[in-house]
Structure formats: C-alpha cells, structure tokens
Image (tube, rainbow, N blue to C red; front, side, top):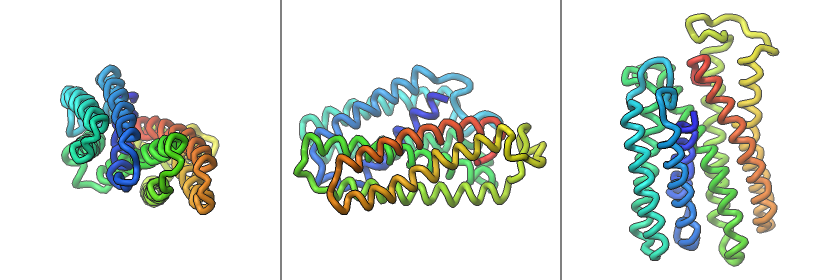
Length: 268
C-alpha cells in the first residue's frame, strides 16, 4: 500500500512539473521537488512486498521489477536535484520528464494484468489509478508551489494558476471515471464482482465510497474552484492555505479508495 501511494504521488508531482511554465519558476523549487520524490522513491523501495502492488490477477509489473524501478526513480530524482542546483535547467527538465514517464508507466502497468487492457474493467482501473495520482500530485505540487511564493513574492501567479487548472481538470476526469464505474458496477458486494449484490447505504463499502468521493473527488474539485477565485486577487498565501486543505482531503480520499478497490477488486 505504501509503495503504491509513494509511486502514485511521484507520478502526480512529476506531471505537475511537466504542465507548469517552468521558465517562470526559480530553480530552487524544482531542486526541492526532486528531493521530495527522492524520499518517496526510497519509501517505495523500503515498503515494497508481495502486497505492495495490485492484488487479484497478477499485474503486468512484478514486485521485483517495481523494486528496480524505485531505485531508478531515486537515482533520477537525485541527479535531477543536482542539475537544478547547478542551474542546468535543460538537463533538469529532461530528468523531470523522465521521472514522469517512468512513474506513469509504473502506475499503469502495476495496476492491471496484461489482458486487463482488453477489458472495460481493466481500462477503468488504470485510468482511475492515473487520475488519482494526478489529483494527489496536483494538490501537493500546488501547495508546495504556493509556499514557494513566500521566498519569491515577486514571482508571477501564472504557474500557480496553471497547476490549479490542472487540478481542476484531473479532478473532473476522476469524477467522470467514478460516475462511469458506479454506473457499471453498482450495486456491489463485499466479496468482489463475483458476488455483486444489493448494497445498503450504511454498509462498509458504501461508507468508504462516500468518504472517497467527498475527500478524493469533490473536495479537490471544490478547492480548485476556490483557488481560481482567490488568485483573481493575487492572494497566494490564502490560495496555499486552501490547497493545504485539498492535500488532506485528497490523501484521505486516495487511501480510502485504495482500500476499497483492493477489497472489492473494482475500479471505484
């Protein structure tokens, strides 16, 4: 579970680096971001085990492959931090895109088996994992970027606006995928798709589902809308505070959703 969480967060944060206008942000921000993903890569490596990747059918990537991928992500993160420290922005950008590509493929391939790409359930599963990663990464990236304005208050608000619109887009995508999954798999039972049956609202899966939607989908979406309005007044400190709330909501929703998907083996 911790390995999945760490790699998803690396994926989401690195996607934020790719979509934001990097030329308008000082190199120190990216140096610290790479050090954060370095720590997350080490966490993924230390926590890896038989239950660290998707359960049920054997996923495309084995535990051993994910272990070596974690080592590779740690190495790229360290080298990326060095490049940004030396103001080698072009090299740092290449490492950023490399981390994004490797972590994105890891999130996708460690969530479904090979034949899962030929089924609706399998495709909904990896798309859900990807949007969950993007929502968590966008809230964390936006919150850390907001704090960076304390050290560089003259920096344009365009980067924070771009990251916030990215959050709004991926949260909207997560909402769409969640609605599609509910349309296909509701009602569901606690024993997985082989035992789909009626579900009452006070059951454990339904309560987890509500917590996931409130924390991991509707919460970040509401946060992004609030930040859009706040940034009209160029108040980056207030926007950062709201994004911090978004981080808490996104983490609650992500972990609850991960437990729910692991138990039911459904892309909810």
